[in-house]
Length: 284
Image 1: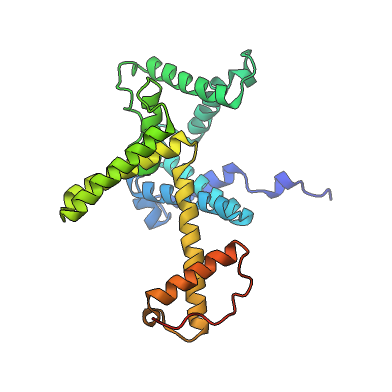
Image 2: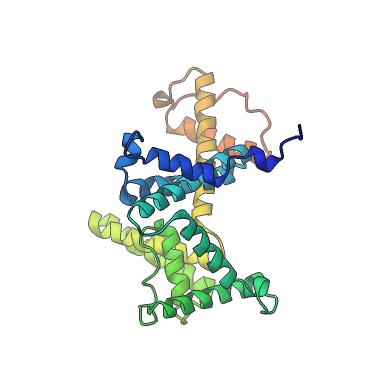
């Protein structure tokens, strides 16, 4: 018997679509799946997208494969709900994205000249604007189609990038850092006044300028913050592990001892301290 090809061994998209149909079958399907709507599964879709990003961040290829499958299942789920309402099918979704990618890559699928990555970014935005105009959205406000449901930092970058296209932007990075200091000073005033509502407003302004600075530096703020989160987690685990090894409960260690271990973790990461087994500082 001929050996099965790798393609034959993989479950096909048809099998996944059939599975989804079975789950949503009113006669014997899953009660939970049958109750779901676009609105109820939307949070899971967002969560799965973040789990894909997390697997990429950790470099876990096996986990990435699984998380991409979970995300694909979300697309199938949404499409099935739409098909039941007679709106569109999974095939319509696949066809639409295929057509869009061909349309937006004329330098690959058409006769347009070769583009650099930067040139393609500009052309992509121009094509999106043309598509909005074709849908009768040419009179829409500039920022209208930037989804409100995006993570706040990501949306801030998209808002300011879109505004920058028409010249509403700082010309120098130093202008942004000056604004950062200005917003920090305004936040400090409201903190001193113990006005929580105004402090929240000023903190929002400060974070918005941080997003602007990230855009000007061509840094993804979400990626930067995930890196900072991972760094904090890694260093705090070092504190926890060292205190546990010394038999010191965390609440009894004291800030001074924990800060000393934090600095130790930083030195280890930088290759400046190769003896993480030395006794930790005495509890403060």
